[in-house]
Image 1: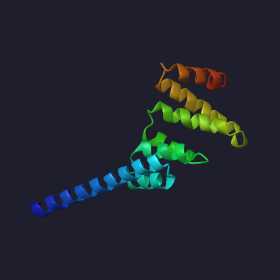
Image 2: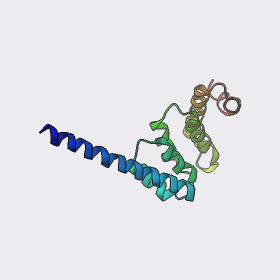
Image 3: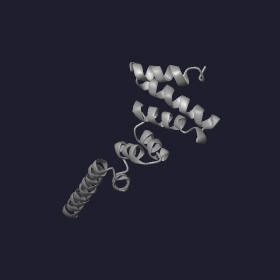
Length: 134
């Protein structure tokens, strides 16, 4: 009984490693070829890697907001994800609302709080978020 259990665990481990290796292959080729479909396949195979979601956001046209939101959910302490999300919300004037602006300002403030010694983040915070978050 113990021997078959150990073999089963080993086989599951090998399969999982194979799936993660396949996900990394799709990620590397998708990034190199700028192929969003391969990046989405990598994210589907390994849903725990925030970089896969970020690359989908970067390479999709128009930008895939849900991908950057998912990257933030997976890695909430990465300041750049918050900043990219905020700037994307502010970029498209036709889709801007008061609510989306508030979300963007809070994301900028969060990014600045996570990376307080960045002069670029401080400049963006003071230009966009600080006047509105008083």
